[in-house]
Length: 230
Image (cartoon, rainbow, N blue to C red; front, side):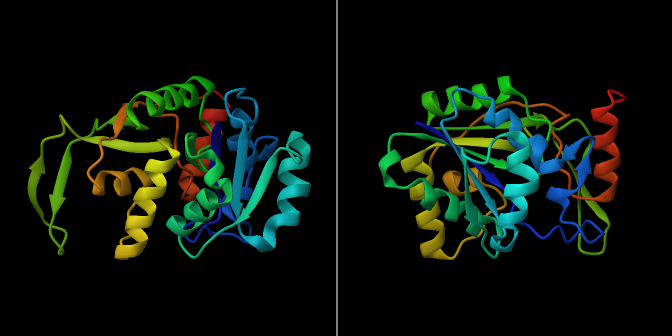
């Protein structure tokens, strides 16, 4: 069994405007609609869990899921205070029956994920236990002090920028989340929780087009990608 958790529980504090960033229009549909569609079309993904603010459930059914024909195949799950809480809610919604399954965890505001990338993550998780998308660092990396002064230049040869989806065997990611919760640890992504319990995570090539829309400038970039101008 392969399940996908789409995390769209954020308030979008870095995006100005009255509409949450995941619901902002991009072309003919909301950003979240673009994100969900590749998972809905992937035969390998048997269950999709959309984690969203509970007060937005009616909106999501009417404006996101119904236009995509996914209203009967996506389970809505209430989001938590932080992203890690939201993902944990999604994992709990999958339930213990899928102990031998694979779980994909994907940001709801990464609308340009492709089918072949989803499949590559699934294959990687089946083989290695944990597999994520990423891209090698291509800019020069600087380390700065609290005053904003550069104190050293980092070697970028082994540096990757993590993306989603991140895929895991269900029992492995649940063990990582339980440990983090018990110890009060908050990570910046799901893979970091798995790394923390001493397990290896495979990273494979993603795409520079697999952007996470966080700021108004990202919306402009997304529109260029949509129009084939970037």
